[in-house]
Length: 285
Image 1 (cartoon, rainbow, N blue to C red):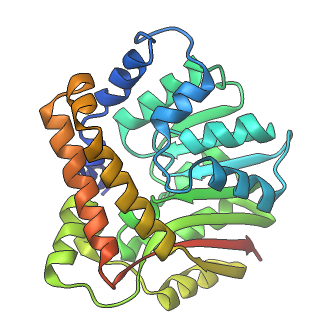
Image 2: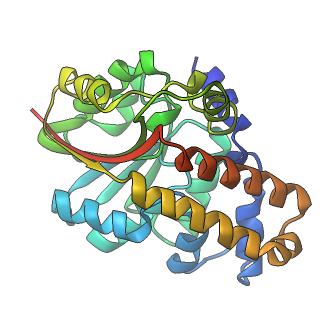
């Protein structure tokens, strides 16, 4: 299953050509080795919608500081993890299932000198053996646009595992997709193939909350970000198309077409009435 999820997610154009990160660094004047300033790395590796503002929100909500520990589940290129650690002084353990993304995240972290406080773990957060690598008394767990890739039937396992990673009263902070209405057949196909949402299935608000409560979370806050994210993905797509000549020069036509396709699909999904975006804040009971 781990291997299958790892393979399935590669239908998502965002993850098919990660060499583009190296090309962006080269464009900024850095080779494929040696130190890179943190702000340059942040710029090319931040895949979350809320950017640095979202990272500051996490620090604020959890009162993160030196001596505290955070786990980032489905951490991607570890962009938010590095920002949070650099700004708060806390340690962050990054859990990523895709081998190539995990390796690049480790390399970027080392190159900007944050590998003392940010560590990378290659693993599947739905599996109990992961707890041996991340521990069971962390102050917080964060996950950005990652849970949507986990099949609905595996989410109880995921959140039970996440609860075990936390100390009592530890915080969980999620940014994710949810289902506001019924998807059309075409929307479900796009979610499945282009966004790697297994079979295009997403939970409703009620289903999501129930799964978290059953896993042992309390004080749930549900902050609907659908409108903000709809604007964000539309602006992102416009900006990408406006910079087409630059992207073709730095990358190539295939990379441009892949990214443009992905951005088009996500913009289209958010412009419908059924896809929602949410920030959930909860505590372990």
